[in-house]
Length: 309
Image 1 (cartoon, rainbow, N blue to C red):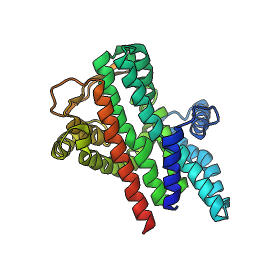
Image 2 (tube, helix red, strand yellow):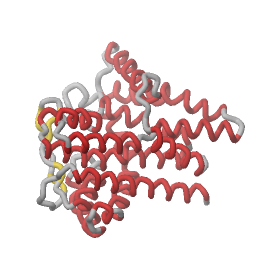
Image 3 (cartoon, rainbow, N blue to C red):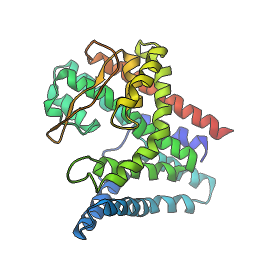
């Protein structure tokens, strides 16, 4: 893959965003995953073996068309066009930032229900239980964490394995978002998808956290605060990866993030991240967006530099 493909894909993402259409490749992959899961459950393959089969079948069936397109594209122009489109549909930084902006605007205007709808697009927690402060905190956390899932991780694998690498990562991440839950239905069946997502995000999450720390000044913070908070709190998070960008953002913003959250009607205990004492306010969402944008585009620029070598 060339740096120009990455530049073009990122440019399209920031300008156009993620189109909300039924034929979106990620939505189609999601429907494919639902179909495979239903078939496996009909066969009573609803344990760990069935979950592993789901991962293998989803990567094979949903990934094959994209891999075939990459292999078929013969001319440089066709390779550029195919690669750009594939990477573009595999990333979602533009939509992430727009959703964060929508939540901030809704909170500032007192439209709490609209803010809840926006937060529901960013994370899986029960938004009906969140007040203004809780919605703001959830959005800050989601912007930081999803900068990995939605941008730095897919372009990392695009640079490493080509456009198909970005798409295969997107399938793996979609699998985790659909079945990687620790509830009665998915604790065993979703284990393989969750573990694969943990492995794939291990390096990108930590690299992103470092860059978030370095960009602390745009969030009116200090680099050393973001860095210290990252190393002190990241390992407390139940996720092996999410705690890194969230802790870095907490240090950069001077906030305390995390804490108990509700998922599927049940309270989940989570540690607090960061030593800040002030409550988050909607204005923090603008600072978080600046932080995420700076770190994400720096990550992309570094990858472009490597691809140009």
